[in-house]
Structure formats: structure tokens, C-alpha cells
Length: 429
Image (cartoon, rainbow, N blue to C red; front, side, top):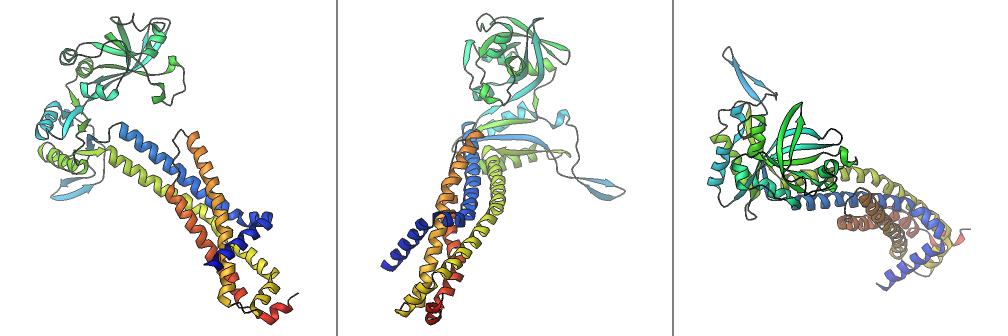
């Protein structure tokens, strides 16, 4: 053990004594490790931030939607023909209905805490002849409104009577007020506004103003060009479109004690057997935040691995550089090796000394690369708007890989030094 520490001390002294040569030798290792750590830090940061956002948006929510069947079979002339995916327009019989939702809530009363339903009327403009505001008109039921978590600045939100009676009332944003009412969020309450969507006029009474979260959009346009949501009761939205309540997808808010994967399988089987067994074109499929997060993480991991392998080429080049400098070092110290062997040093001691020097050289480069990679990853993550999460796995992997490179590329020069003939080594000029 004492000999090992002595070898490490000598190796570190060698690095300090030849700073420039050591730095140039370690350059490939530094670049390779820094690239790998930087990529893994950015990947980790994106995954961590997405996970936080998804969890805050409801990790236990299950999205249930009507989807096109992947294939269909048609019979002609007594023969069956299988066809690949083809698009078919949905008819009234294909949509989810309120009766189906009631059936689900009755069947899983402990698992389903609520069902969020929305209906888009469209995007349009409200104008007073001089100023204007763009809005996206969407109907929400109570559960969907709760999920929006709006901050009300004036007025009120929807009552149960607004929902059941499909009253023509709405909530608008403070952006809307800034554009059309000089930012006065009180005077607009009780006013009737007309929204123009595809040259049709829709009239609603404003009952409240909410605070618009500008960070929720990537748009950098002015308040005049920003589309904000005009909220209304969901039955009002269907009434505006002269449609019966029906949905192509809904979101189920489930209990935290519910096994999401089992529940989704059970729900899909039940709905497809009960309501879509005879539907030739459509079926029910479910997804959750956790499955989406798994898919995203899997995709990101694959991309990170691919980029890390490319960056690993630098490590290979760096390892060859270490081998080269070790051969040069051995040649420079041939007489020293001959003296040690003449004094009785064993081949294993010589071999260990140079392998340790190679490992120390690679690990010093590895540590510099780790620090540089973390710095690059943190800066890149911050620029992309993500919270930085340095990859602990990547750091451990980098330290182990640096050591492995040192052993692999240092063994040949060390073995060459160990097998030197002491007489020839002492005669070397």
C-alpha cells in the first residue's frame, strides 16, 4: 500500500513538473469527458424539469380518447382483405358521451375523482372598432376549470347554474382588458362582448377577469397579438356550435392510491367491449402523464447515448495520446529503469509504477473534464430554460472510464518498461 501511495505521489509530481505536456496529453480525455458529462447533464435537466412539470400538472390524470384502429378487414367475393391504417371521419356514434362518463364514474367511484371536459369553439377577434383582442374560445366543465387554477382579478367564476343552464357568460384575461378596456378589470364585468369566429358573431356576457400567465406561452408577440383563452361553461360552447355534448377525448382525475397502469388497461378493455365492440373504425385508448414521461425519458436516453458514443471517440483519441506520452516517458527514463532493476526492483513493481502514472494522468484529465462538463451542462440547461441537474451516474461512469483508459492504454508501455534488460537499459544514451 505504501508503494502504491508513493507511485501516486511520484505521478502527481510528474504532472506538476510537466504541466504543458501533461495538459496537451490530457486534452482528448478532457474534451471527451466534458462532452459526455455536458450531454448527460442537459439530458438529466430536461428529464427532471419535464417530470416536475408533469407531476405538477397531475401525474395521476388519465387521458382517454377515441383513436383510429390500426387496421381493418374487409370481405369481398368471399375473401378477407386486410388493410393498413386509413383515416375515417368521426360520426356522432364514434364520440364519447356524457352517459359513458356517468357509467365510468359509477363503475369506479373510488378511482375516478372527476372528469375534465373541454370543447373548443374556435379562435377569433373582439374589436370595438379601433382596438382589438384575440381570443381562443373554449368551454370548460367544473373539473377542467379547477385544473386551470386561475387567479381571479375581478368578478366571479362559473356557478353550477351557469353550467347546467348553458348561460352565455365568460371569463376574459387581463390582457383582454388591457387591449379593450385600458386595463380596467372592474368596468368590463357585466359587459356584453361579441367574438367574431369565421365571420360568425358569438355574444357573451363577461362575469370575471383572470390573470393571464404569460410564462405559459412561448410567444414573444405583443399583448395585442397574444391569443388568450376566453373561458365559458362547456354546455354554452356546445350550444354556440349547435352540437350535442360529445367528446373525442376527456381527462380522468384519479385517486393517488389508484394503480394507473392497471386502471388504464381495465378502462380500455371495458370501454372497447361495452361501447366500441361493433365499431369498425375507432376504439378507445388511454395514456397518462407517467407513460408520456416514460416515452420522453426513453427517447432522450437513446439520443444521449448516441451523442455520448460520438463524444467517446475523443476518449479513444485521448487514450492513444496517453499511450504515446507514456512511451516517450519510458524512453526518457530508460537509465532510471535500468538502475532500479539493477538494484533488485521486480518487473511487477516497474509495471505497476507506469500503470499508476497512466491512471493518474487520465484521472486528472477526467476530473478536469467533469468540472468543465458540469459547467457546460449547467450553462446550456439555463439557456434552454431548464433547472440544471448534473448527472451523478455520468460522473461515476466518467471516473471509472478514466481509470479504465489509464489501465488499458498504460499497460503496453508499462509492460515494455518492465521487460527491459537492465544491462541494455544502463547502456542507453
